[in-house]
Image (cartoon, rainbow, N blue to C red; front, side, top):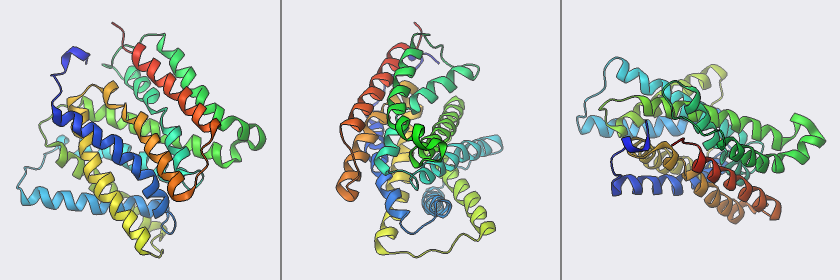
Length: 300
């Protein structure tokens, strides 16, 4: 789909993108707080069972028509890719690295988005010069990972976090592209509800098999889980699906510029996470690569 195929974006689409840019930036801190006493698998299951259940209850109250056949199973599959695998990898990565650093590594997600879209038949053509931007962006990430990788190999916590997050970027990109390619008239909020409930049920079953439900909830951790469910999963994800449906993919992915700024700021305020010249310089290098890729990626 080319840029000319999109209608003129409405103000609702831009406000949705703004909500994604801010609230998803805050979820990195929310995940770190919740991980103080909740295992990653349980956190993913609980937040999406809560958010998916709330949205489905609202949809049934409003008597929204449920999708049938493939229109139902499609969001189940894409939800397991984006929210399931993508969020689990992010949550797992934050057990190895600070939340702000995780947000910085996620900024390479547009490379995965554009590259995956290019490989899948029917995607946009990519200008070969855009690969220069990808190399620049990944150079910024290597700047952060390289010293520890040379010293400790893949056993280093920063390297582990980086590699896990590349899995998150890939599954999130693949699920988002497949969801965007799917043309149906199902309410995007209901699509999000099906995705979230599917992830909650699937990961809940995993927890039962692993008997991984033993944890203690403090008011602080409980508040973080509720915040992740309400603002990370319901508000921001519904806004993401709406923006994804009404804006070009390259524009939607600009939230990756804003999320790390929010995450790094909150990580420093609440946990005094380190953010010095090295981290700032690497972030600017990655941003430069992302900007160049966006500028050159779509052939004219």
